[in-house]
Image (cartoon, rainbow, N blue to C red; front, side):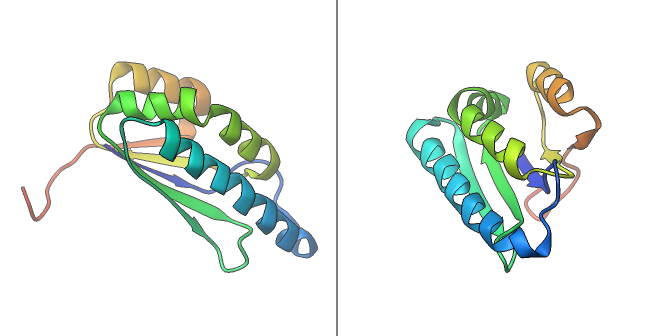
Length: 127
């Protein structure tokens, strides 16, 4: 299962504050990565990508299964990501590729509603 997070929600920083936002965003992202590295048991990938000025971020995440996503979101980084979204987030969209358990679908829809896009695998080079 792969999950891509694009954008965020909240207020967009003005150009004058983008550098300070970039520093704070880097600090918070580093905290999320360290907590994931230390505490997750089913995360295969948790990569952060920053814009040139570091004021915007996207993540690319991959998990063994739906339980891995739930573990990551609810137990590992919930405090860190809540802070991240509260301070920096606007226009968040999550794209999920692959099968999702009913528990994950219910959790995602309750927390993000229409901001979650669901895709099932169709075809690829290895199929």
